Image (tube, rainbow, N blue to C red):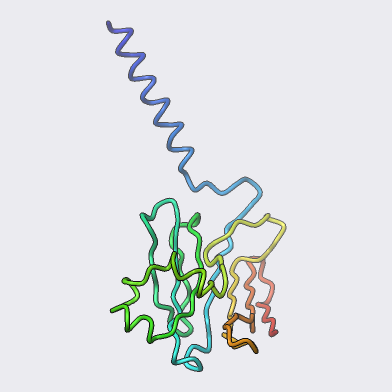
Length: 169
């Protein structure tokens, strides 16, 4: 009996150890985390639209929505979540009684996402000295009246003492 209890305890501890390593956010050896932020910079130029962040992922039941604000970093939450950006007419949100009443799965065919972005931290090889990345996008209206994003500026910060790098596009 004592041997059986010991075997059960050992099995539980072994399974617990295996499960925790499966769900850990361990950084792979030879890599480091790069903090990444993505912001939109000219929302005021498009007052007739609401920009909505649409987030789905393994820890979310259904989806989460965020109203995007000018110069506020996008946030997808958990690193394995997917993030899409929709531009919807404000009138659509008003008719529906708020964005929470819009079925984004249905409107994705008629109002495709502007962009599928990946805001959030990333892993890079240790040879890469970048420590932080900041991406700034502007909304642009195409000739066919669709909205797209254009990368306007990127800021790179380094962990090795190298001066920050600003790239304007």
